[in-house]
Image 1 (tube, rainbow, N blue to C red):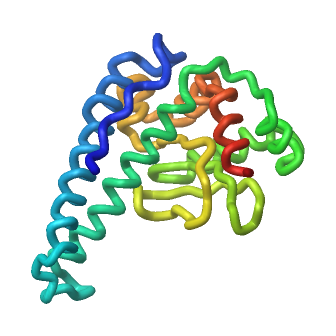
Image 2: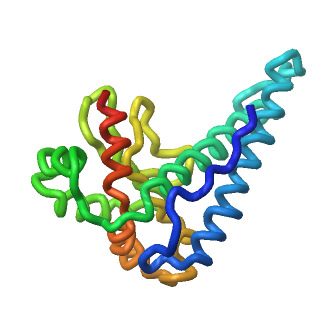
Length: 199
C-alpha cells in the first residue's frame, strides 16, 4: 500500500517559523521521504515475493541497503508527521498530559527545560513518548531518523532539530527556535496522543 503525504493539521502562520520554512519542510522534504518510503518498499516487495535474495549479507548487499533505507525513510515520514501534527496551537499547557508531566518532572516548566536541553544536545530529533515497557513518560533523542528510537515507545511530542527546520528563520540560533516551538505547540493534540498511548 502506498503512503500518501498528509496535509498539515493546522492552517495559518506559526509564531517565528515562516510559511516559507513550513512549505519547504512539509511540501518538499517530508514529501520526499514519503516518495522514498514508497520506492524502497516497492523494491522490497518484489524481493520478498520471489526475487533473488541470494547475495544478502551484512557487509553489503542490495537487501541490506534497502532495509537500511527503509527504516530511514519510514521514520523520516512518521517523525515528520508527529512533528507537524502537534504544531498550530497556542502553547497553553493543559489536560492530562500536563498533569502527568507535573508528576514525572515536578512541573511542566521543568519538563520543558529538560526537553529543550535535549533539543540542544541532539543532532536530529527529540521525542517525548509513552514507554510501554516502563509504563512511563520518557524523553529520547536521535541523531538520525533510524537511530535513537526505542521499540515499544509511542511518540507524543516530537521536535525536529535538524537545521532545515529552523535555519531560514533563525540562522544558527537553535535555542530561539526551540523557544518558539513551545509557543506553537498544540497541547490539545498532544493530550489526545497521550491518552491514546496510555490505553
